[in-house]
Length: 266
Image 1 (cartoon, rainbow, N blue to C red):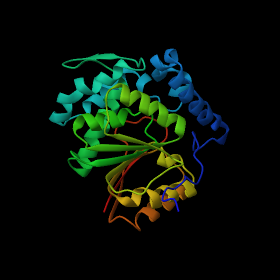
Image 2: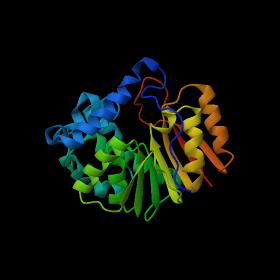
Image 3: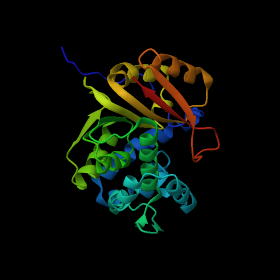
Image 4: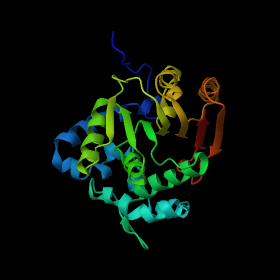
């Protein structure tokens, strides 16, 4: 008998408007094409079919400056030039930052998320991390640069392929790429999910809680979930497995609606 699990449930690219569900298929198809077309791969971070889902790399300079202002950890500040090495792939928008040079808003955003994780959870050096819905792997790169021991990235097959192409192209080897149709049993120190867990239906959230999240000591989630029914369901299910389940308002607003941060601890 296989000890792997296949994802159950549904993901919506827009949790409010089902009419926008085609964005998800367009995104998956684009990731496949970008992995097999070097011209597309060279500019994938600015292509509309990609940025409709993962768009932090084309945010304005104001966002980059606002996110930069939240990075107060000296260790993270010193690592910004290393984080920015990922901007050599995918042609993101770049802005010049004093003492750093040119850096993308997406990389600054991922660094600001790392800063917030450490503020709320503590130092994560040498952690084993699992990420649900990791985009192109930008957050994983920042975590690995910081000193995380290993990352497991769970996503749809074609998006996994893009993450692998991106991270192996930057010479990262301490990463596993798991299709959502082949999730294995493991234990992690930290689970993260930036704007992905919140876009699943109840069945999808329940699946990831049982197969991944409950096998972690800590969790950090950025949430674009605005309906109280799914939010109450998620928080109640998490309280069955974690002693601490806390929510915070998003620091720098990225949406007209009220996004939020979810922290869990064993």
